[in-house]
Image (cartoon, rainbow, N blue to C red; front, side, top):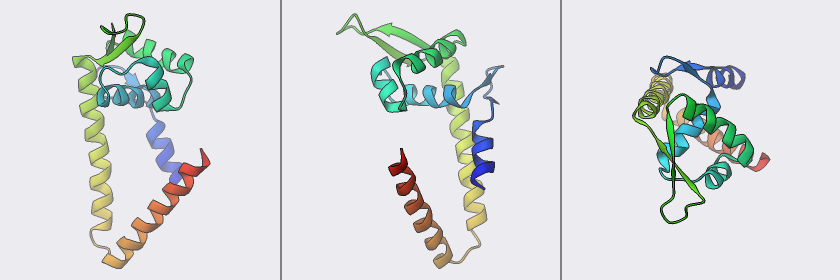
Length: 135
């Protein structure tokens, strides 16, 4: 199941902007949207990558018209990142995709007895904590 989910999650998708986006691009765009005005260094830290790696993704997002870089009024040497209207479409469609997944999970769990749902929730939360410790 994890392998299938990972493969599906990493698949390029068209979010309604006429070109497929990589997982890293959508993830980065979401971080920018949820932390509007974030600068490159802070974004790299949030994503757990180097400034060089995040700069490559930002270049692609900017070329696709999904984000813009603006000089920070308080610190002219820093660039603030913002999502464009086209980027907002991607953000909204990605949220829709995530909600479809949540709905599917709820549908599968909907007929399960409460004790089984409780066990599954505890299991997944414990697994998530263990995975967080690995990185």
